[in-house]
Amino acid sequence: MSDLALQRRGILCVVSGPSGSGKTTLCRRFSESDQAAVYAISATTRKPREGEVDGVDYYFLERSEFEAGVAQGEFLEHAEVHGNLYGTLKSEVLSHIEAGRDVLLDLDVQGAAYVRAVNDPLIREAHVDIFILLPSDRELQNRLQARGTETEQQKALRLLNAHEETRHWPEYRYTFVSSDRETDFATFRSILISERCRSSRLRNGPGETTFPGV
Image (cartoon, rainbow, N blue to C red):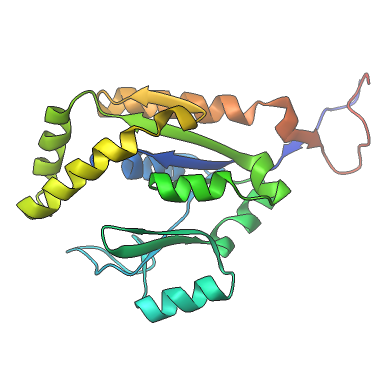
């Protein structure tokens, strides 16, 4: 029996959840701990928060730049959230998927729905999505308070939006309730590792036309 060389295309994993659910932290941690995964940097028209770096945390664009990119078809998805535009550049996704690298995106429910509706067969084959729920409003308030980056008015708006976003969890392939950081990461990682083993994602390596024994 000859050596079996399997290759796969990458996964496009969309992660959503209300503010404070830890979705960005999970995406970053997994991509930093796994060489076969990358965290796709979103573009936004909002102003950088203290300590944020252009090209690392977000691509910070002027509204006119962002709208020009949309008009030229450069975005996989885009949406307006809290008065600012957010979107994912196609260049941040497609080349990685073809190379067998998983792309992690943390998106709001609008952006996730946009990706879910894309007709591109490569995107549809690669796509999987995860929603992270918070156990209670009190926990959401505690996490927003701990961030210390928003005014009371902004926190109230995020709480209101969280209630609306949470209604959409049944639309996602996977959903779990946030616990502590280590438990959340273990759950998140197990989903992605399982998705990598889907038979539909695997194909023969170069020079092979069939799997051994087939």
